Image 1 (cartoon, rainbow, N blue to C red):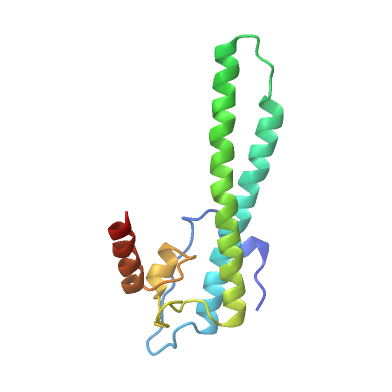
Image 2: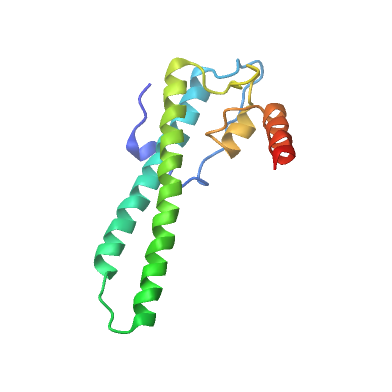
Length: 145
């Protein structure tokens, strides 16, 4: 089932939580389409943010004679570019998760194979680990630090 652009989520926080039906199988077709809609909408929103940044930087770029003004503008642009770089990495993760949806792997922990869970995926649609494996990974990271 294809998702229309008009049906896409407009921002990462803007979606209706999935109402699971009693006895419904995990990652059923309606659930897959729910997450496809969330991921596609989120990716579209991020890409629009990239376009806005490019236009903003082009429109606002000025050669200020005052060094303080020039430094402020450069700092603002640096922060925007850093944010966009993080978002670029997130777009890559979203694209990977969309591929896993197509393969039928989405929603299952990459470490143990358990169900990640609908609510966890709604909170973090790019999650690849169940809560137990993620907690264990974070404990190990803290021990290494």
